[in-house]
Length: 488
Image (cartoon, rainbow, N blue to C red; front, side, top):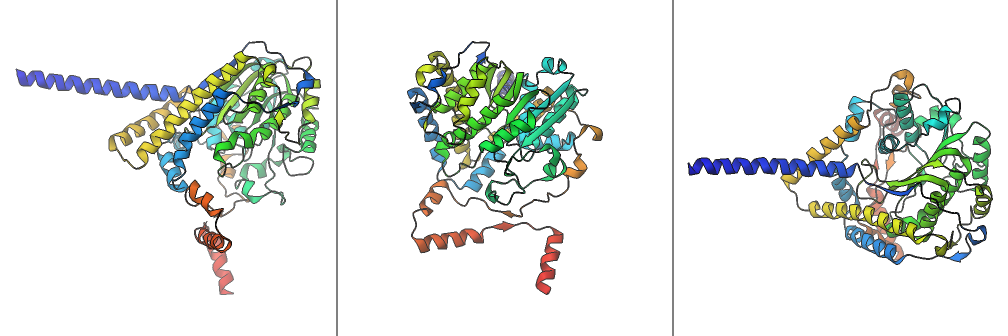
């Protein structure tokens, strides 16, 4: 009898543990798909006076600077980790790791990348496409995509439109750093031009052919190129630059790019349109000012981190819907345009121009995303040198559940050949602009910093050792060509 009771208790405990594990997994997956914060929901905010623009020194919010300090404190724990090994570890522990393989196997989207997945998630979760306005506009929809290379936002949007509103007349223009312009630094160029090559008529590279949105002539050229046509109801801006050498100041490095992208969107959009902007953190005053400007111009503004965005980074997206086009916005944009190229070291608005209520929302929003990011980084640190088989199995199950939920919730189906923009048959070909030399950043962040202070000959020796580690990937045909040259 006692043995029976003991077995019964063990079975009950095992059953409870099973349900506890399932509940934890469900909560983890649900939380991953709900990392969003509403900044504006029909509130009325007023634009500051024109004469206050860029007239005051940079200011700071103590609570936000404390959050920045806490986040950088956790990120600094990674400074001694070898970057390649750390990236491999976090890739294996990425909760959304199975999404791309599952889509590639079952759906075969055109130009499938992580950016494709992020955009499809956002456009499926927010009213980013203002259908009512578009239907009143002869069912015609035009979108502009800034910093778009290699083109995954465009192909992802096409996939969503073909699935949800296939009868819509859609036109698009994309702008990005020109991969064919020799004056552009190779380090800033994409190595995949398959989509661009076959859709060149839809790409605008500016008056100087660089594709740099931060040049005033290119900005005004984009406006002239786009506005004469029918109303524009969506602008996306997915720009970034490599901040690996200044990870603690990523936001400050990118502030002016975000300013240029925002100004372009506000010039281009028709009333009722939407704007999607990638940013990182919200600790500095000019990011707060940009968000307040958007709060004054759109009915709804939310910050979201897609489930398919890498959990340990600071990347988030600002989703702005229903552009109100304030009556005095034209004079505002003209004034802001005066500072388009100069990247002034003053604040866009004075702190007193922004309601404290709005700043408190920014504080709560920043804390929300900082807490998530720190938790993920700390968890990755804890598991880096401490392999746990049960934790591994648990993560595998979460990765399967995330992929299941992604495909089910967003109703992703396979497109027919006539629904694709250029087709997977073409996209499967090797990029003409492909760079076969892949150079990874060697060692840890602290080791790279130390190299900057080496004596001249020591630095040359270190550089030589790094060159030895460069890996060159050659196809079978490339190897035959190289062999032929040596034979001659």
